[in-house]
Length: 256
Image 1 (cartoon, rainbow, N blue to C red):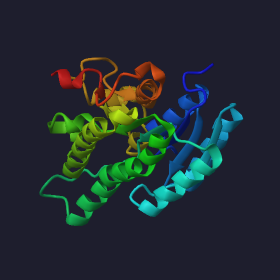
Image 2: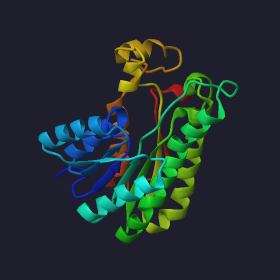
Image 3: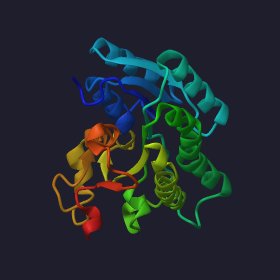
Image 4: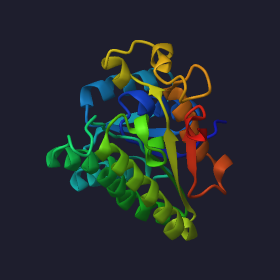
């Protein structure tokens, strides 16, 4: 019996990176996965791989900044599985533009996906979790919500959006704990993902070289599975008395 057997999980940004790793490990642990992403073709390929490996999953296109898109995903999930136990608000974007460099459109786009998307996800699933009598919501923030400097990779809107996710998580934990709904945030540090690879960095070790002196724990950059394991803990009943925490997965960066 897996750690998530019998649980239904919606995961955003599941076509790649941390979201994909979360979907894969959740499926191995027995969850029924509703994998969502704006990139529909790539998502379908990854979901088929999960199914071929013995997992149960469906792929649904989701624009996290659209309330209509969220309602469609939630309604489809309820029609197919009858409940929602877990929501992982993982989807996000980054723009390497500071306060002076960013334009209003840049700011609004990052905030719409990274913050409004999290709020819409919570707003959409919480009523069903209340009906179910329990639930676990996991919001992906960042160490950029806790420390400054290079932690936000020069992204002012990114820092602001992730700080808002941190605060929204605390709000949700306080207001919905009475419904046995737990709301926690995960704060990744330097993590090697497909997005990083597309930027020209080919290995986790190569990425880590850029973070020596910031991250004390070799190889100085983590991998998507490190974050997926954090998601798994917070989604499982092992964390049944954990609510409103900031689970930092950064190799010790914020200990500086």
